[in-house]
Amino acid sequence: MENMFKRSLLSAVVVGIIAGSAVTAAPSAQASAFFEDSSINGAINFWMRDRTRGGYDAYTGQDTRKTPNLDHGSIYTSLGFNSGYASDVVGLDLNVYATFDMWSNASPDHEMNFWNVDNPYDQNPAIDECQNVTANDETGELEETNSQWNSSCTDNGISYQTVAAKFKLGEDGSAKLGYFQPSVPSAIGVNWSYAAGTWLGGEVGYKFDNLELGVVYGTKYKAPWFKDTYNLRTTNGKDAGDAYSVGARYTFNNGLLLDVAYAGLTDGDRKNAHVKVNNTLDNGWYLAGQLYVVDDDEQYDSTAYQLVFMSAKSYGAYSVRAEATYTEAESLDSSVVGNMSYRLTSAYGGSNGTYDVWWNNRSDFNHDGEFAGFASVARDFSDLGAQGFSAGVSGAFGMASSDISGVDDLFEYAGSVFANYAIQGGALEGANLGFYYTEYINDTDVGNWAPYTNLFQDESDIKVTLTIPFTVK
Image 1 (cartoon, rainbow, N blue to C red):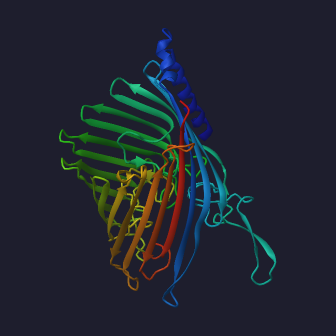
Image 2 (image 1 turned 90 degrees about the horizontal axis):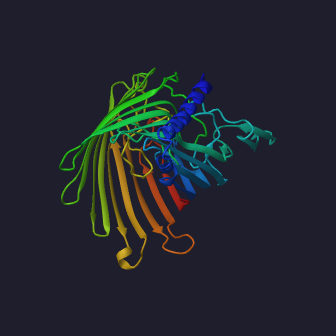
């Protein structure tokens, strides 16, 4: 049934292209726009990371030393083709990407290569590729172990990001069909690494003056660190059916933007919704107030939500941000502290939502009852003769009182320094070199992942990146 659906969908894409091209076979200039207005571009990306993480010894009441958590160097390449519209009706978007680990000495789920397991729910490892040879502590004999967490459990290779027909529906309408990323107003989004996650399905959007409407439907999904799509599942691991979303954006004449969307599952009870109010004032301040809601009777005791405040402004060469969140996410399990993630599946990598908060300070700061804040200052040094160079600092904190007897109150914080250089000349002109360092501190006396369900102990994290974009056409 699955293969039949894929064949039917791909056949529909091909038939749509042929039909659109044949609408006006003469003159041929109508169809030539398909190629003349097309573009071919891509990038070669290098990502090197060294992240160490500590633990907590409940017996001594002390933090334990940090050990490698992520230690890898990865090459990530992509190539995309975006056509024009034949007969001003139908076109085609294609994007493929390949990944390769130069080295990987810690956890394999680092998102910059393919994790060699079947899906994010079962996480069954490939037996031959995920084996480690270790010495038995008692006998000293060598033994083979097979685990999805072995550092060898990555999979160099190639996959697709986008294979989709695109359609113009008159002057103000659009549609996509195939393997795609939602682009209309929606509560359904994708995960990102250097590539985007992929939905199998389609979307339709239409614009009425200042009002934009969107409908998205997806039957399967894959995060970019998986090669193939997989079915959606509920929190309890049952088939969740398909995903759907309806959304609307309205831009007022003064520039204020209202974004509202709802998403659900055809065979699961989990639902997502958001309301976003964004505006840029005359004095340059960007301000946003947002509400994210997740309802899941298999995960939460009541409807979970997160309130968000965002602000940003530029002062000459300086850019500043200040943001805050408050989360309510009471777990069904009274022995743990719940957390809220805005997506249609609770499993990480199972799907994603259109969530705007990104602090890049390690923690998600999203536990039940947690209040969190973030601030960042960056400077562009072009005015001092350092064309293309920018740097900055950021910090975040989160705190919450525990309602569970014997569980320490939550207090976590982090600081980061970062720098970027856009290469100005030579063979690598246009490439970007980046450096990002984060020191994360968790003052809560608990172990990793429990009883706080999305919390880990102290970390040190270094990321070095090189991005080389190129254009063929």
